[in-house]
Figure 1 (cartoon, rainbow, N blue to C red):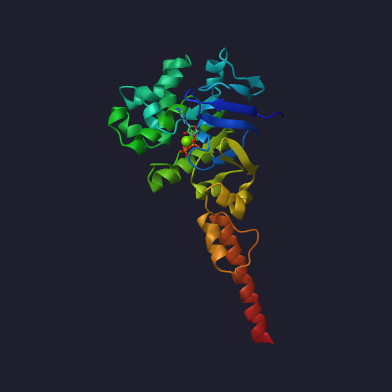
Figure 2 (cartoon, rainbow, N blue to C red; figure 1 turned 90 degrees about the vertical axis):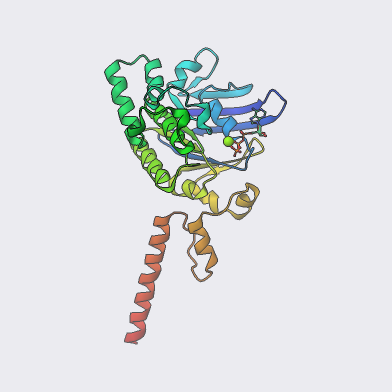
Length: 284
Ligand SMILES: Nc1ncnc2c1ncn2[C@@H]1O[C@H](COP(=O)(O)OP(=O)(O)OP(=O)(O)O)[C@@H](O)[C@H]1O
Ligand SMILES: [Mg+2]
């Protein structure tokens, strides 16, 4: 099985001459959960906007399911790759929330019943069904973000790309977003997220790609998030969970736990070992 999304030696420069991408190559497989991290201005959003043809490669190639994205097929390929923009004001524009989420499925030429079902499911998933008659431009930023996410879910794309999805969501909203992403992943979707949220990346990602200055600094699993020099160079920080284990030198758990589950398991093991030692001590 080939890669679902391939980027080959991609360069991109904005009209004013700013170089944003300087030779990016990467490959994402079907069903992967990918987190893209890196400092402000690293090129994350610019890269994401190439994944569904909002920007076309100026140099290099972007392929979806083996097919290069070009001016001729960008519209069709956009049905395969759904994109939630960093700023929901770039995305949410219809008179009502319902219309906004229906916009994509309507353009896909689906029947009325199917559209209604998709809009209902998508708005339920993001907790916005009750606000379906409201005007999107009168919603809060986090609510708009939820509507933008629903709009992409309703189109049922194979790949879902989200730029800073947790920004501006309240903690419960962030948690429910993680549940939505888990559910979409279970349904076989490939999910790519650009984020500054290292804790979320550590909990969630199979693959981590770290960008800086329009180049890939590193790509691999979440172990990258606890590599000291890399973390410093990419203006990141260790996941909170990892920081706790780092802070107490006697907790010599290696590799450093990165997720709450890993931390809980490590502590449970340490406690069990301690219990065994205490018993041994009492017996002898
Ligand atoms: N419309 C634009 N015109 C000119 N330069 C731009 C434009 N948008 C972005 N840039 C520049 O391109 C580079 C990459 O920006 P990009 O928005 O992709 O970064 P980012 O990694 O998404 O940053 P952030 O973490 O702040 O979202 C930066 O140097 C930025 O100033
Ligand atoms: Mg960005």
